Amino acid sequence: MRIKQSKLTGKKPVKYYVRQINGVHAIVCVYDNPRCINTIVTDKNGKETRQCYPLTEQQYNVYVAGSVAEQNKLIAKGGKIYGTNKIYGTK
Image (cartoon, rainbow, N blue to C red; front, top):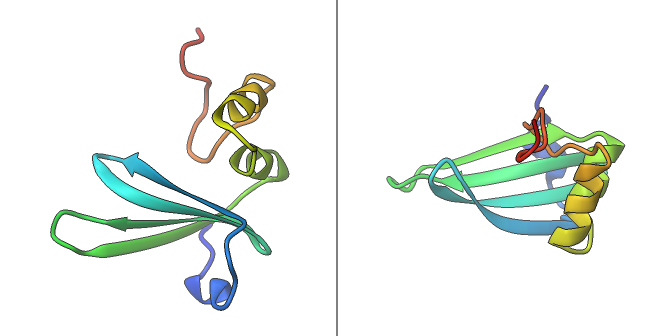
């Protein structure tokens, strides 16, 4: 279930990234209160889409990890990032 964008008004993200999602660049913002991830995607036509989803504590810890290596260690221990059901590269 999504979180309304109005709940993020006036709040600053704990961490943010620029990622490529489905062939377009997206800004991914991680918030601690409410604990959620907000994606801001601008498509090729200039239309902006914002979506905010709640995070479990385990997912939150992966997103705020200090480095990609640290994120990978947490994922290997069973942590999942939003929208993934498995660890890629494993059978």
